[in-house]
Amino acid sequence: MNSNARISTLTIISAFMLTIIPLPAWAQALRPDWVTLVLIYWAMAIPASIGVTIAWSLGLLLDVAHGALLGQHALGLVLVTYIVHSQHQRMRISSLLQQAIVVFFLLIIKQLMVLWVSGIIGQAPDIGLYFVPSLVGALLWPWIYIILRDLRRRFGYRAM
Amino acid sequence: MLILIIASVVLMTADHRWHQLEFMRSALSNLLYPLQYTIDLPIRFYYWSDEALSSREALSDENRKLKELHLQSRVQLQKLDIIEKENARLRELLSATPKISEQTLVAEIMSVDVDPYRQLLMLNKSSRDGVYDGQPVIDAHGIMGQIVHVNATSSTMMLITDASHALPIQVNRTGLRAVAFGTGKTDTLDLRHIPHNADIREGDLLISSGLGGRFPPNYPVATITRVERPLGEPFARVSAEPLALLDRSREVLLVWHNAPGTDGTAGDETTKPAETATQTDEQ
Image (cartoon, rainbow over all chains, first blue to last red; front, top):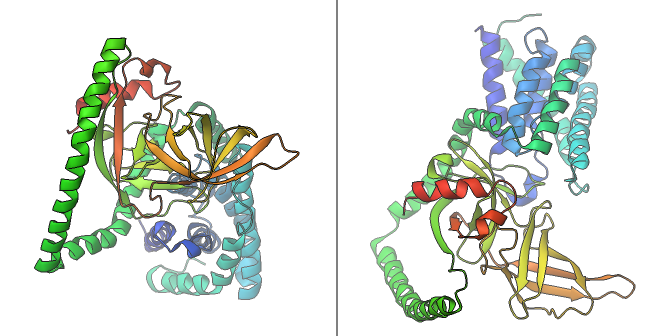
């Protein structure tokens, strides 16, 4: 296990903890999708080692954590990771603002997949605040990017 | 990538249609359990320290109050006891089905968020304690919900207010039967398909009817908060407020109700685990 794998595993574990940590009721609907955000970063930074299979397994874990159908989040994460892989070189050189916009649409795509499946099985949630977490996630993206990049530079080796 | 997408779709279909993936969910949840336990730990510590560090007076004060309450409950129970015996005797005379006996086990809710759009909670009791899929969960005030996933270390319960939950109920005053649907909000249940001329009023107590076999009968569920009879619509609009403290309880009761005779009518998966549960029950 090299240092990159170690630091990415640690950050993904922290993302899972942030996902299940109890928040007050008003903040629950605003909680960004931490696992997807961290996964987007790692898929962009080290696409060779964070593949769609890893994304899929993480998605299954997320399904269990959310009590959703097995495969619901997995499908979304596989799609997102695939898009990031095909665009990672373009994303790396764009500015933080442009990245945040792309991340916003990636988060929307993932949420749409989850919503779509919930709709098919007849558990469609109230749509009112449903996409707010994507917005919060996109707003947080610059900080997530900088924190994860510094972590990778300090503890991982530069694979680029 | 295509393979994985197909795999996800297959998994979702299998999970939704045939409920065959509990073993997989259980295995994956074992991976997540350490995280959930870590998150729950500070809160558990808070409750523990609250107990350990409270002063002697406060504790003795609480003790005294609880003793008084206990005495009062004992007095009420005595009456109930007599009534219950009388009821059993009368039933014997009528050779009706014997009364259902129930066993309970206290479980704690883990302070872990599941999904803001579903009303799910994690409990710290698992298949080792004999918890089974579809088991009813109550608190001191009424029915809370039922178990939906049992894992090796924890279990997930669904509150009666989840948007996909339905609970067969009965109006205590008139015996009118209905089904209470969850709305996704912790303080509202919907009663659908109630005709306009049904005898139902605000403040009526709803109890579980036990139809469907999943929930034990005669437990309080909710009180009616609003009855509207809009002209031009075929049914009345009735909403109710659950009696159980759905968003405040920390301890809940798991119920094993081994009803002789009604078990066969339970429908899908509730029948089998009920028998195994009685053997492993701690009480």
